[in-house]
Length: 109
Ligand SMILES: [Zn+2]
Picture 1 (tube, helix red, strand yellow):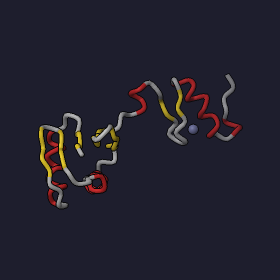
Picture 2 (cartoon, helix red, strand yellow):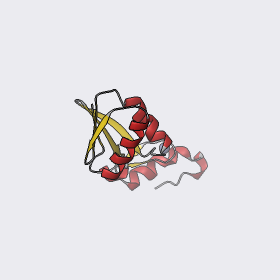
Picture 3 (cartoon, helix red, strand yellow):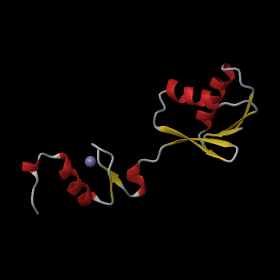
């Protein structure tokens, strides 16, 4: 299986060292790590132990893609901080957020 760190060579080196320490036999080329063993559990452990909660793991064919999550704001939606509701724009979000307020505080437009 290949692990693609998406052009982040330094991250690939760090992960490669971690996987080596866990007993995997690996080769690294730029930001891609190749291993014949199953590295998935250790990649998950790596992301936890190195505090990379803002990274996500995806699979494409025989490649594990380890990449930074794209904030929802970057793909044109904004989310409600309280419940995760996705709104197209700020006024939709404000309208939605009325549901979290006590009824007496809702401003009528
Ligand atoms: Zn909400």
